[in-house]
Length: 403
Image (cartoon, rainbow, N blue to C red; front, top):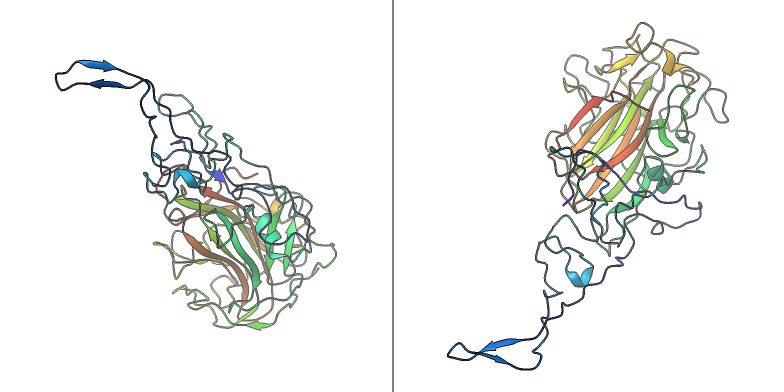
């Protein structure tokens, strides 16, 4: 088993044309090119009852290990393409691990073919090139956050099983500018993986001056909505309104690699509510909801600060604003700050645990709270499976050196 401190990409795939059906694509769905062969034996040596050796012709060949037995308990047999039935982290359902970090002795471990496709360290390139800003294909939304591999209910490969844009109550969302796939957010905010990032907004997911941009502090899209159960998340010191508007989310059903212990993603939250509505009822929120809910989440929500505050104007990571630690550079060219005061978080990283081979639903959701005014926007990017063998806990922290 390869080990290291790195986090491994969700697997790349070449950008697919927009008319490619869900179920096509690369990364994690290729059939193993490794076949199991029985070993060959040498000349047989038999002994008599007295212990004297009798030399004869060649005996039966050693059949080797049985190809229909799953010796390491990873769910794959040799006949099903498991190229190392002594290591449960190596099989056709695993993610390829590119180890670049030296171990305790200063040596980079020998690479392994974790996914049994016959190629070592074949981490594929980005799959989110050539996606238009107004694209509303949910599988392209998954590509934009660097989820590229596609799985199906009939196989045991890891990847995206389904993708759709939804309202807060889980009903289908109709196409509007509330969704964007962008290669930057102004001149100073860059993608954190691949070539594009997903943008969800309670207004318009565009930068100022672009086609479809709001060009104001408020633009209504979907109107009144219904929040997921348990939300808007309550902050006892600053309770939000129970009414939401302009709710939009990307809901993904994923199957984790068999060697994964967790996953992570990057996000950044902008709002026109800062600073006037800090600790008011108008707490627009961004959620990352996981089902089944992992230990440490709040009603399945993965993204919150060290005090348990949800991602809203009240989160402790609000560092981009006039007089804030990161100043206003990351507001430039985004539309935020042009017409009124506004603020944003730094790039943040959320991580959460997962069981290898588990199927989970992950929904990224944003909505206006209390009214439809003063829009908020979330950037989501850089999804990665954690497959270094370490323990993963639910946690959100600033990214020290974002791209």
